[in-house]
Length: 118
Image (cartoon, rainbow, N blue to C red):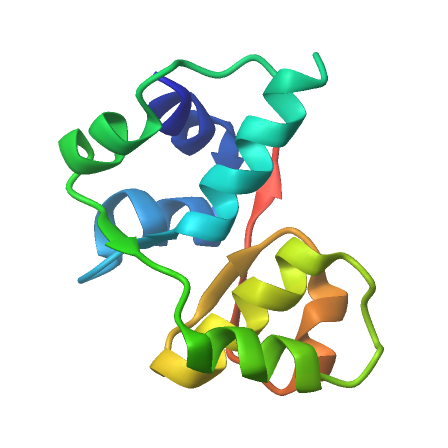
């Protein structure tokens, strides 16, 4: 449910691209990690089976590799959020476009698809 609800909250061109236009949508293990931390702290409501929902959505799972970790650790200190830094590293290393509402991440010279939240 969370992934569908998240999709429904995305608006504009970016949301449309994720819902209908993207050939492949990858969900990072780092995103699941962040969601689970926020859920455990009571800051976010999320279903128990995020992996199953990812699969049902037709999204691909993207694991965190040693190469991703090395790249994230070597990024310039433009942004301090470790989860965002991992997503940037993964997008750069895998040649992906990063869907985000945080346009400052484009300063890392990674393709960005700006999405807005309702």
